Image 1: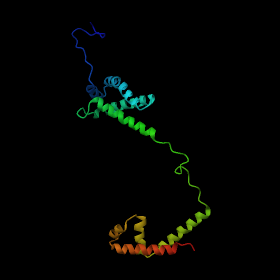
Image 2: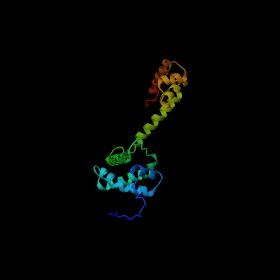
Image 3: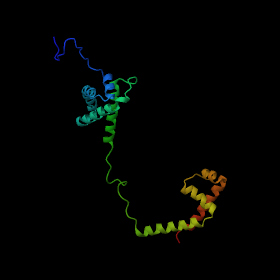
Image 4: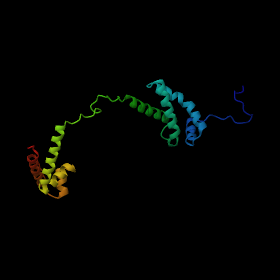
Length: 192
């Protein structure tokens, strides 16, 4: 019996390309190969995704997966995986990404992180400003060796050992200077 498709006698019947050949053709941006690959894999991918996603979301992710196939076909390595394994790995990763996006809880509008801080009372602001001015004055009045050690510790975030190395002074000296400086600052910063 003759097949449904007519072909000239003696003309070879063209066999369909296997999945590997299709991916190689897609890597060369062959649109017909991509259309065939799409016909073969879209229903299988959608069925795989529909097991854990809604019908509409499975459709969307299937489109994303097949678009990734188009874009990433040149990176397909037949020595590492069969075409179906490669495609379903892409589908699995896309599904995981989708589930992660939807699993994130929406931020609570009453969460303190999103609520602006209350305005500072004028008397509190004045006290804070006065304390800051006292601290700056006290820091300026410290002996330079003590002030430098505090700057390294609190402004540069260095450890006492790092300060010792940076300033090339013994660790015990660094500790003494920090202790003396803090004692002086405590006495100077107290409100009058």
